[in-house]
Length: 392
Image (cartoon, rainbow, N blue to C red; front, side, top):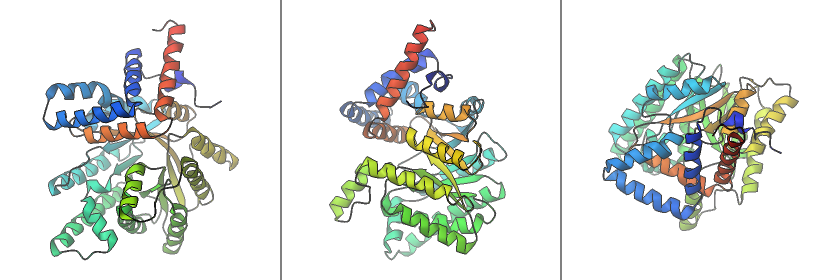
């Protein structure tokens, strides 16, 4: 039996109405056909400014998966989570835009998040998405080694400058800054930039953190190379470990373009790879700090077991656990209750602008085997418990 099955703890902040609404929503997400039709309709109606649709989104997907329209409005959620020893990571969830003005605005937003997080134990990390700072196609050109035009060189220099500015500010204000992962065909370009920032700013401790997708092949070898670079360069490493979010897209592109599939052959192989990363961290705590971003109960418990075996306290400063807001509360609230370093990824942004993020999350829920069913089972269990105790 899973240790993460106490729904009274998991849903202590949820009203009956919120749970019932979440149950209906996850039931809909569970059906891929319904999800795909719903996403297409949602994108069309939001793009064409149907105001009633934004109202529906606000009361369903937005309420479940987003902290608020601004970081300030999200603080109510942050404070509530922190009562349970759960931190928050503000995630400026604007995706799919490629104008320079948007990149500049995102950079400014991340700087504001760094200021906001300074000195706040309730906000232990700040995060940004690489494609929030520059065009995906330009990262791809840099990674492939193509010769850039003069205007592309200027554009790339602006991307580098955005990284430098936020990393410098994070360093100056002693705020841990995490860089999210992207598709394989741009990830090496991202890794190179992040490694440069790590070498510059992680001299005394990990301020800049990279994200490693363990559903990819070759990541354990990459970690070994990274560790060697850090030892030789005299700096520390911070990693967020995830399984990954672009499997179908990655497989399709590899097949279409005729290169080896960069994704592990099946879920078990991905799980094994993720669990091997746990060993990598535990065996290298002198140099490595880790944020285990996972909704997988077995991997979470495995980290806890290895911490205990090595005599590490639950709140050991080099190990954090994280889940997305609106999902896997059974894991997060259990960890918080036991005083582990538990964190929720807390997206925020205007309703219309976060629709691409929300639809991506809906698709991921549909494609991850068992995730939606697990959420439904937990919600149903809690609703039944409340009925038995006369609380509904």
